[in-house]
Image (cartoon, rainbow, N blue to C red):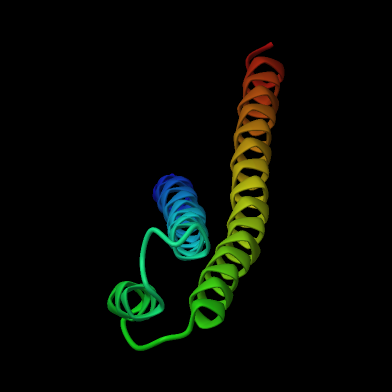
Length: 117
């Protein structure tokens, strides 16, 4: 049963990280788009646009951040598929083990009843 619990815990972690990556990607895109809008509407200068963008993206390009989040999202989805499959297999094995145990107990009762008659 501990395997099932650990698979469920990992699944929850992956869903959390997936949601975070999607949120950060959306925020990055929204921030860059809003900043670009301010520049094109002449509310900020090109120098201010570049400064704010560079400060926000911390040494990476905008495309690198989007690609980074896309990779995180894809990796999380891939692992989530694997964890789901392992979880289903483990749960099926547990159910099969329980069914086998019940069958074995029934056979033992029948053998015991036949022996005593």
